[in-house]
Image (tube, rainbow, N blue to C red; front, side):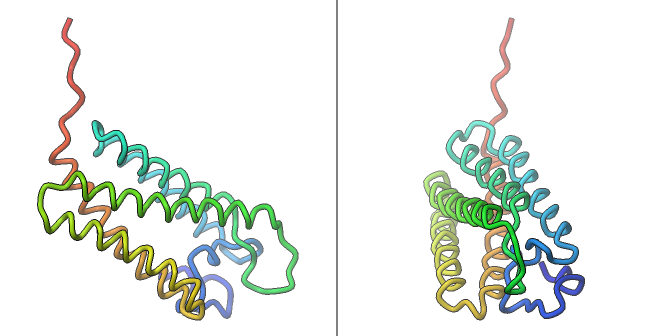
Length: 180
């Protein structure tokens, strides 16, 4: 997110360009970002099944979030450089899965507020959901800083996700054992 731009497109800007553009079609070393998307996605799927065992809705939403991350890496964004031929279908599918990813995250954060026991955690969950929505809107509304907004959103979101999963891991009981 912060180091790969040094090995990517020459005029790549951390402030202007998104992480998806690091993995864009016909971009040097794009495979690194796309593999990173897939690893993050797979990690989220695993975490959903390990730490949210008995919480059906959050487990489903985090699983879908992870799967959409995997497909975001598989289907690549249009090239940064204008005028280069590319697959419009891959770019559209990338956008669909990236949008699904953001939607799932917001649903997860809102649903987390209903699971939390402490008021501070409930408030934080809603605040994180709203900040994700706000940063997503800023990416489109103030697109010259889309890369900055996205990186802030990712940092806030993934710190929150790690903390949330740790809280839920402590709460969730393992599946009951079947006695013979």
